[in-house]
Length: 269
Image (tube, rainbow, N blue to C red; front, top):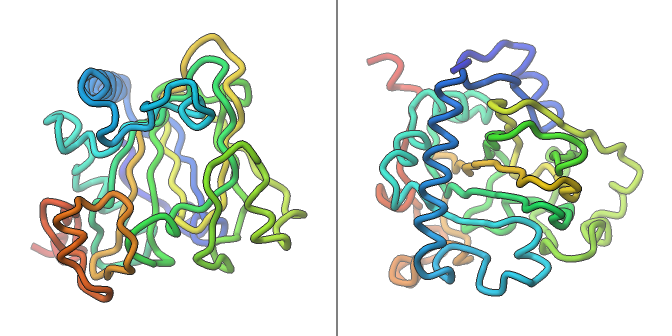
């Protein structure tokens, strides 16, 4: 694992709101990520598909954007080990410029053959906390190309984005009704080989094209929440019992729901 960041990479991320690190995983690590993703997705889809998936209606537009399975680390030991790797936590903390980082949620995003495009959107406005420093990793499990639905970003918008959003629907450019000033920003495509990692800020606008190939485009992702974040009133993926116990402003620090995987003070121990 290429778990060391250069000053140039950190500056690029902070300026543009995203960063691609090609060949982040070696061949054995890539196979382990593929195995754990395949196993955990199969287990989830073999159960009740209304639990943390988007496959209740497999013919719906959103279900054909990607097969989405959330919080796989809760139910698959191997995936938990990968997602909670402190080396990844340290990278997330460094890029975000915070003192500690917690898991918000992991999710597999598998764009099927002939899958629909992913509309422009922001991440943080969906979530149960509001932070300008939240970020996600996106692990490429296949070669990601323009043909099979690579990620696209609007560079720098994380610095001016508001906590307003649109859903991932059939209108690819719906976000520009909320942010018309972003229409003239040149999008940047991020194709990358399998084993690469893509980081992006939770307020960086991003999208993905359709999968025009006959093979799935597989990615495993994880969203991270800065330690010290507080509840903003949105349920998102919080379980009912936990959600109902919270008041706006409460610290989101439940170790099971939002595991702390890195604090900078740990490096000194």
